[in-house]
Amino acid sequence: MRLARPDGSPVRVLVVDDEVNIAELLAMALRYEGWEVQMAHTGTDAVAVARTTRPDAIVLDIMLPDLDGLEVLRRVRADTPEVPVLFLTARDAVEDRVAGLTAGGDDYVTKPFSLEEVVARLRALMRRAGTAAQPEDRNVIVVGDLTLDEDSREVHRGGQEITLTATEFELLRFLMRNPRRVLSKAQILDRVWQYDFGGQANVVELYISYLRKKVDAGREPMIHTMRGAGYVLKPAP
Image (tube, rainbow, N blue to C red; front, side):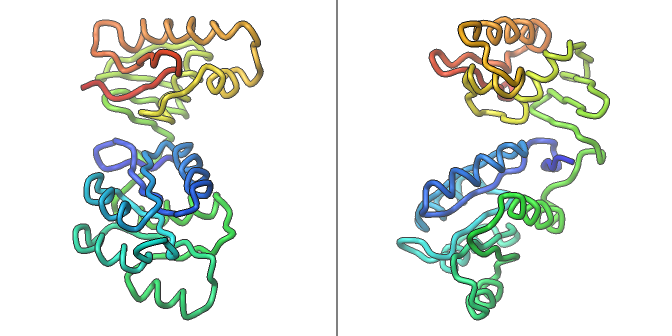
């Protein structure tokens, strides 16, 4: 079941880790959940990003190059006292764990960790905090006024039903699971068709055009071409 904010928009998570590879790996896993993810690699940046994006949850490394995670938490909580925080640390000493939780952290994961564990802990924290819920207890993806029900395979935009073929549905689902993220033709081919078309990558262009005629026809466009990069789906302004 996918989590969403009360208004149906994707939940927002801030990932803070000075190890860029770890931050990017976490961000990729969380985006696959359909969540919007921001990253920061220093404590100072984390505080600034948190103030501007108002995340629904924060994954926070305790060991940072400038401010430590406990100080970041203190400053963030001064602005958003209710935001759930999941601490990451390479240290597993009991006193470190107690210090993190005493400072106001909601949960604690020790490196090395599994991505599945981090996702599960975050889902539990956001449900507990009431910042996110499962829309109608169904597998429903919502981006702007566009909804896709993974169980009934029904798609609606602005309350109007849109009929899609099986391949169109899979393509739209992949775009909607990654809102505001530019997806390359190669990524789309690999995820939707599950094999490499070689020189026939124009099949993606063809199916994007099919989707546009059904999803964007007569409306503000949601599917955009990023020349030389791929395609992105985002809420209409």
